[in-house]
Image (cartoon, rainbow, N blue to C red; front, side):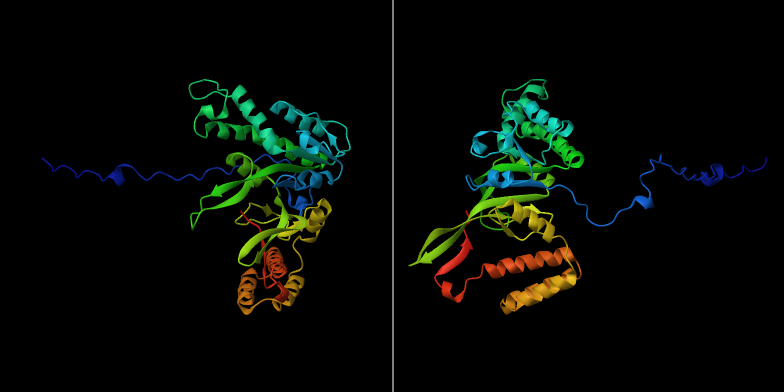
Length: 348
């Protein structure tokens, strides 16, 4: 009787599977995505501005100077302005209806002003309560009754519908969009030091964050105020000027995508001139401008600026930002005659 043959190894029993490469996917062609249709440079488009600030500073007057504006919102804040305005909406759907009318109707308006978005917010909340249910299928009369933060998150769905309509209005009709909001002072929990107060939009944080992300420029408007120190006491003094801040500070939120100076007059024409002038410039001209200003600052600041210049290289946008900050620093430095005056803008 012959000996049994040894069992075959697993690899002998099952040859390795053949690897088959997936077939290439060929997407359907629309004819638009071709190299011949590639464009270079910045795209000029209508501005999307969110301006907020203290009461009575002139936010509505700023927007009223935009090209051919029409206002949507509460009438109380603009009753003294000679402007075109929609009837005051009483529901969220009426606000959307007004935007749709501008999108499809025949008109010559060039700017839509929502005055104010914090006035529109309760209409959004009422719409959520009328159309949404909680996990148990129950409706609620108050936005907070849906649970902690749930109702406010639901409202973002409707804010996005409004923003989409505004984007279509801007793209199709070439209209500027200006959102106006009030401000309030709220405590800020500082993770790196002591807590402090700062100005914020008078909106729920979730809606405010969405609008801030959407806009091209978030501007903070205030009366220009300085602190005068005399005999060991500080006193706030207004210069009489009304200004807008374009970059974030410990005391307020602001941003822009136009390489704007950090501070501008509260004036539509001045704002648009700055938008046109502060697009990325010739790096060589910016370097000459910065080099001229370096002679007006101390050695410590000059060293910091030169370090920033080395990191920026030929990036015109970054060089413009450095030039703007340096100019603002020089303009806020006290002169020898101001030994008893601190030129520091009032902050909360």
